[in-house]
Image 1: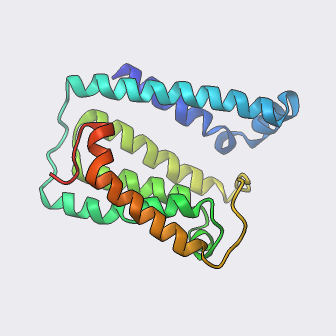
Image 2: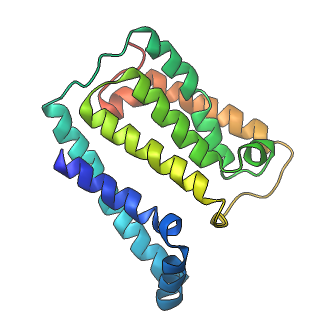
Length: 190
């Protein structure tokens, strides 16, 4: 469990620099340059991500059950997961979805985390999805005190929302039908 917690701390920690101290990020960018900061940020993020994956795998070998969700929550999970991939795609395609949600990626993370917390009750799952949920909520709240980071996006287009929905739902179907079992060892369709 320590490896999972360390991975979460490293990954979410580096993603929280702008939340906790925008001035620290600005000083780091000024000292290293934008590309230097991006490189360091990417290396630390990748290290945290690898630790999360490895730690989660270790934790699943000796599972600790915190609660047993009722069967009906699986249906609710399917429903809550529907907007996740369209929101992720909409992050990079300016349109009504992006405007309405203000930050579609954070909305996607919140839907993803809540959906999984409803249908799994192991300690490792609660730590993983709970940590991402708490981080996403704090990140969204921090926009009251700081401007969101500008991300590179596709040009505005009248079909961006339709593309986000169609591609997102296709990815959702792909994950439900095949990828979730292959990547995570659990079939959501069972």
